[in-house]
Image (cartoon, rainbow, N blue to C red; front, side, top):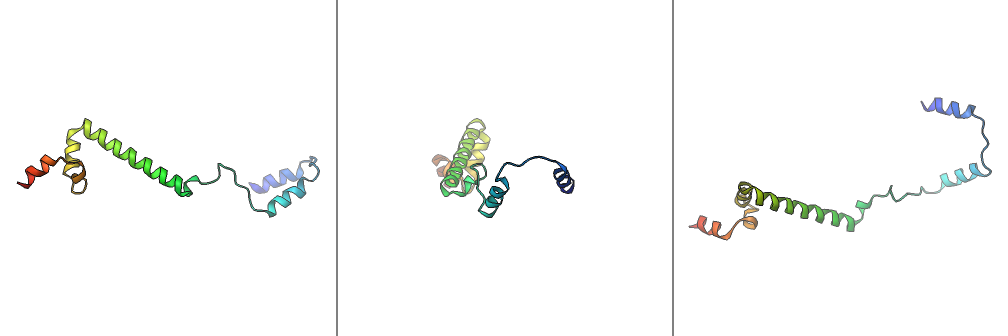
Length: 98
């Protein structure tokens, strides 16, 4: 497909602006210029930290909302080995130890 495009462009007759070829060759030898859209903003540590903290806050908020509206989920979360110490009630743990 590129061969057909090249052939079509070679057959076309149009006038180039003065100095266009020289500017294009000079630009090709220098390093490429990146637009703001082409940059990767998540490579910066501040934005990465911000993204991770927002994701953690959303996860905690979703769990809290789900535990409020679904008590069985909240109890299952409280019974979990690692999260249970954080999400469980003190009375529940005191009753289990007796």
